[in-house]
Image (cartoon, rainbow, N blue to C red):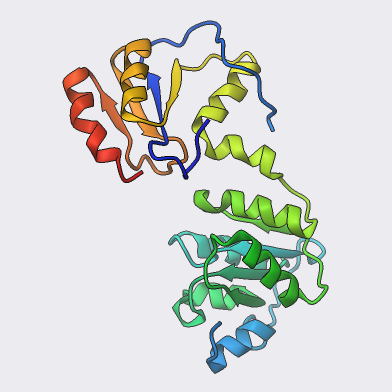
Length: 239
């Protein structure tokens, strides 16, 4: 298997008919110092009182990266409208958060980097001051593993790291489906140029070449024959 730390985290799969059976092994499915920032950290001046009828008891929900990408603010808004206490953590400065996010959040923690998982967990634990979270959510694909790691670190219900990995690792995902008896296109993980050529020989053309942990079809190519593969491979060296 591969992850983002390998030099060629790509998966090849065939565009043709999926085989009826697969030999893949089974796997478990498995800061800022401005006045505005001080108010956000404390929860003051963020979310006004609302007369909207609550649909259920208030719960504490932490949203990772509530201001990015562009559609994320709508999730914070929706949660706040149904009565949840919405907290946010991200590496955006408070002043950079969209107005809708600032209106929806009860408090916000700015961290230096969302990808320093242990540091984020430590800062969150100190910031929460014993306040219990009911859920930790991230609607942005690159942050799904961070959400799982924070759930495990803080004892919050939800998908574990083991359960989340198949949603981010495309080869693991296909192995899970294979183990469940669900047909998938022929697939092969590759961590080098040589392995990409080996995959093409085993799978045949046309094939799809894509990052193991990609999102939004970025760096994804349909390759119809060997000359196209030779042209595409240099474009993936940054992955």
